[in-house]
Amino acid sequence: MANRGNRVALLADTAIDLLAEGGMRALTHRAVDTRAGLPLGTTSAYLRTRQALIEAVVHRLADLDRADLADHELPTDAPPPQPQRPLTATDLDQLATATGELLDRWLTVDRHRSLARYACLLEATHRPELRSILEHGTVLRAQARDLLARAGAPDPRRQGDQFVAFVDGLLFDRLVGTGGLSAPQPGTPASRADLTGAVRTLLRAFTGS
Image (cartoon, rainbow, N blue to C red; front, side, top):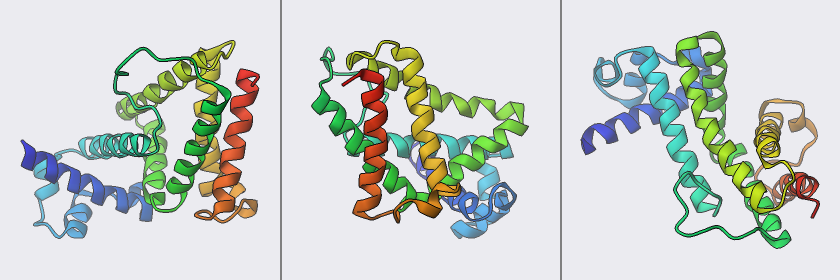
């Protein structure tokens, strides 16, 4: 099982690169085999349909995102080891900094993953059978609701959803929108400070801190 898991991860990583470079049109089983240097038919043997291939990409992206969240000391979908204490203004500032740094990473080192993620989401709007890939976003919204509840937000359920939408929109704007024309160059201290400031402003507005 471990060998199969490693092979599927390799295929998914290769598919992510193809999606980032050429969008959904570039994603075929043959293209994944060729890019990965594997015999033709390998991808089909592990992921028989196009839907299975896209779902493998989404699961891989989710796994990599969870690892990033843990590295930046942001909440993951793992259960907390103990009851969670209320968040202070200092905690919120640290959360804003960590989020800003992570967003900057997704604009630079892991830009290809961000592009692949949006390609999958757009594909799901045209293919109802792929709508299940949107379930990944529900985990992030649940985490945001919990964080804002602990921070004393008056409507953590609604504001948690809005927080995730804001952060996702900020990333999208900097990645492919007009925000990239005027924002600081990704990967610089100015970029991280700008992203952190935007997140901090929203958190303070939601919590009144």
